[in-house]
Image (cartoon, rainbow over all chains, first blue to last red; front, side, top):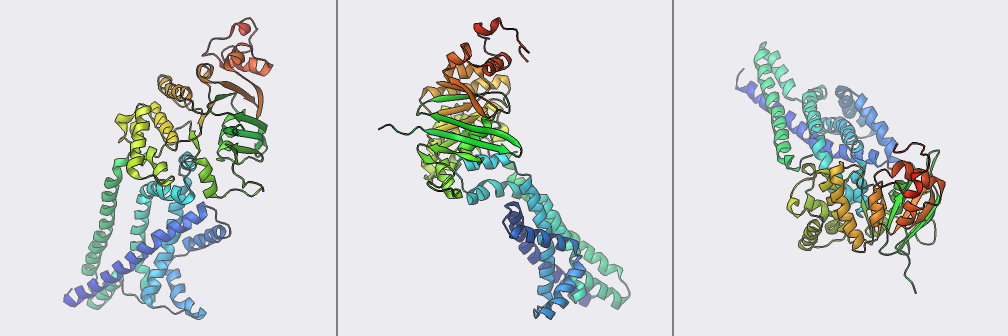
Length: 213
Length: 272
């Protein structure tokens, strides 16, 4: 594999990293928002969110990205490849994160909320001071899990022509008739990226460890 | 012109599904009174307490805190908003059976949280007040510990300090010692006796008959969601007026001495 090959791989890594990071940064808080809507049983919004989340969870990423990129223009909405890729991964991540956050919220001890109400805390304060700090810590492993899954599913965006890391490796392999070197390289890159997330998770957990329980 | 009672409950009714838990119950508590709610499990005592600060919404009836209607906007039937409820709840301290401390906050932070965030008291002042309260319940040395590091009795004393932090006019205790090991019950009851002696207005749901006998100004005996008997503790424990009260005392008052008047009666279960 020569310099040109390595450059292609580097460009692919950039695409994968960029798309994944954006989808993670958008999908995690959006998932929290949806989880809160469902937990608070907001009238009208709750059932809609439930249906949308179920549909998104049932849709494979490849299918979803094809729908977003090719089907949306028929409704008059044309978006560039990169945006379609980010949107697809965000939607999927958002749906799974909604369930992660919702699980943590459902498991949250009711008497702590009663104590917060009894002290006169209003809904926003209860959420900000009592609920969120605790569920963020409890949900961290599941959320990071979801992030690593997102990165590993990101090659799906290749079907709309985005040259992500895996696609770049396939290309080089097809050109040089020697697929092994590029595939080994990208394996290492994926391991490094995902390993980075796992490491960050461990550091965060250690930092919040002071509060016991 | 007399001030309205600190707490006035009239005709409270509450059902959970098909289960009628409160059956038109009424109660008034004057300033400085310590009232103990006694009764068998399922008599509605905890539900009554939780209706007072609107943690449960009664189906009908009214609750007045120092003359102000709780839970419902004065006049009509419109339910109060979260903010309006918050304002009234600040006047009521609640101590939970299972402590309900916030585990991610230290002892000091638990006690300071409401004064700082709800009453908007400046931090240094809130901290000084919190430290004084912790001193009062005997936990000044543990102020930087976290709830997981405390014993049950210590956790409950923090719970009491937290309830006191808002300077409430009324303190509600929901079986405060039921979840504690017997050795730890005493330290919590001591704090409660102290508060009662200092003139705090308290409503205590408890099975600690000794405490009820010593510290209560009045005992209210409930069964099936109704007040069956009420009166000063010495009258209730020595000369219960109703059959149900007698039955209850026979079965549950095992820790306090069985009063002479009941000693000769053929007991159904004795100390069940």
